[in-house]
Image (cartoon, rainbow, N blue to C red; front, side, top):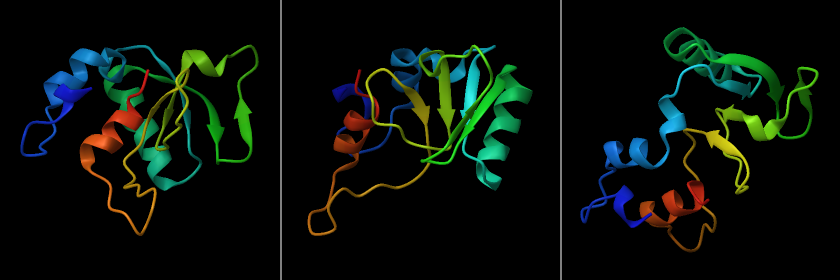
Length: 113
């Protein structure tokens, strides 16, 4: 995880893609958040990488195409902090308002295997 950001805290995108190639892999199945940016993420990934939208999840309720398994899907426009779930989000997260969180710590949590 240490090689995802440089000494100045800048993201090293090529290292992220090397460690997590599914981010730019074609023909993935995805689950979207049911809002405007979720739909735009789904549109973008389906147009560029031919991803298939198989469900929607709003944080409480999930609609999933029959016979699909969430472990085979990528959640778009949301952060799911489970080792067995792949997800891509763009939300800024702060775990504790009283204590600032370093970008590197967030990336380590987000990309935990």
